[in-house]
Image (cartoon, rainbow, N blue to C red; front, side, top):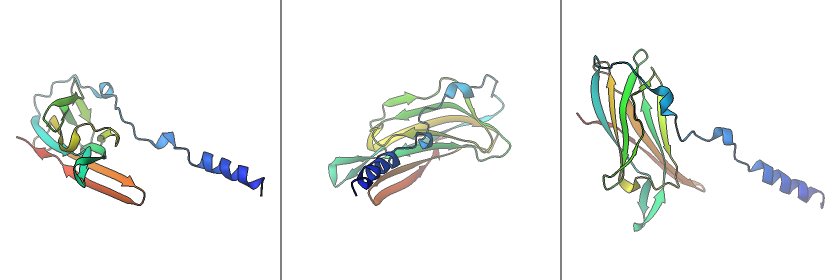
Length: 166
């Protein structure tokens, strides 16, 4: 029995290690996706997306963090989409992050993501994103967010979808 206990402890310690290769990439290298070409022949638009990196529980003072995945999807199998601006704002409407300084592309059927960690109170209970984009006429990106939190055997998850502003 004395020999078994150390082996059991080692198995527990090494069996609980996080697999770092499965963690999501938080910071995308937007510079590798820049576009220099003229996009004048394309239609342009702007999309609003609400996110919730925190949610109230019990009362106004108690807040819980949520992991947020913002997803920008090109749902078309032939046309590339272009993003001109990706900006986030907090609950009070103050800009937090301007993600890109140059136009970037999203290839056909490709998805780009921004991950906001559960521990980051980021935009608060009323965070916002604005996406400015260009695409062939009648085509636009599909933008949504998934918010999730789990603790023990309980969890909460929900989604929001982008709304075209113009």
